[in-house]
Image 1 (cartoon, rainbow, N blue to C red):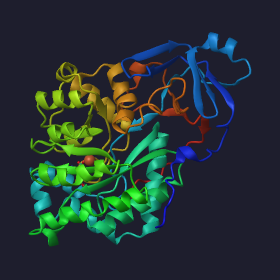
Image 2 (image 1 turned 180 degrees about the vertical axis):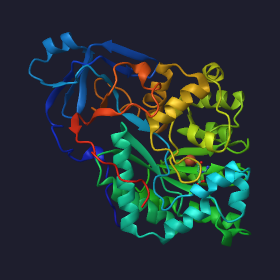
Image 3 (image 1 turned 30 degrees about the vertical axis):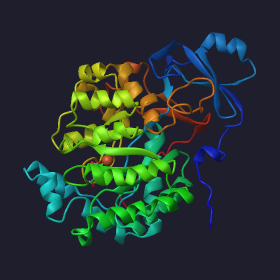
Image 4 (image 1 turned 180 degrees about the horizontal axis):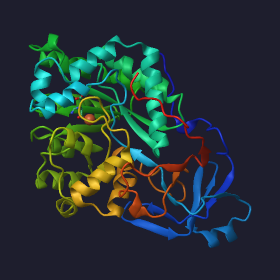
Length: 431
Ligand code: NIG
Ligand code: FE
């Protein structure tokens, strides 16, 4: 048996001064969720102290200056400081694009009809299969760089455009390779039920079983920390998803589910029943579905770019508040429904479409998104013991984050307390 160690960038030394004792000060305000993610705390003229890559204290700048006189000061030049953002749902490894499909959708053709005519996910599966390994790996690394430059220090990346078992393993291996190239925290997800290959049309059960059979290898080689499936009448049934998710859970993998996107089919209830980390999309979910997610502690992930592309409505903030569920917002970056390259811009859209407050918006892309990845003890807030992942933004107040479109850019991005150089020029996101 060949055991390969998990290559988590948080375990590797980041260029810069991550080992040092630093204080980020002279901010307009430091704004962070509290440790339990219950509310947003603001420290006007606040500061954050990092040591050995972790936050040791956050608070009033003058107080911290007195207590941490030895720390090397880093001047935030009067800017807003928040935790690094967390994009908890992307399909970042793929080749090509499907710009033509947007035109077809806008002309009235449905997503399901385009897929049934041989387009949709299968188009990207073919383009990805035809692409060279090194090109896919490098383009994913370039995308991760772009996400970091937009303020994301933790990003989830799913496989899913392999579709055949060996092709999914190929993508998971390439994701692991790309992660080595870029100083971003990446959580890898095996999206094992995405679209049924044509040759399995009359053998659905065999296909599902072939994906179940991959689980031990994914676990043994630590190719992913969670498993996802597309639960929809146009994709896979609740029972088919359950057949993959239950053994995944037994192996200690986290669960997530694309649920109630095109139609309500019971995915949210399944996610709640299995205590999944997240249920994502939920455009067709009911208030009962949201209440079930609240009960199980499953984060509901909204994907405004996909909702806009497909002409779906997002839920209202008032209903979400009543449900008591935790809500995250993510890009869903993919070539079909969400060619969205800025998490903050997606959050700005969700703020308007749902009616979120600025505090709710920040929670949705920090603490709540970290919880959707099972990382809420480590990232998504700036409190003692968390990783020193932070952003100094080119603005002064939290309210400006969901306000500007295009979104506010980071001035500095810190990972484990290290101030990383940002790419001066961003490459295009497709090969
Ligand atoms: O999250 N819903 C399924 N998967 C993707 C879209 C995939 C595609 O169209 O390529 C999504 O929207
Ligand atoms: Fe998705």
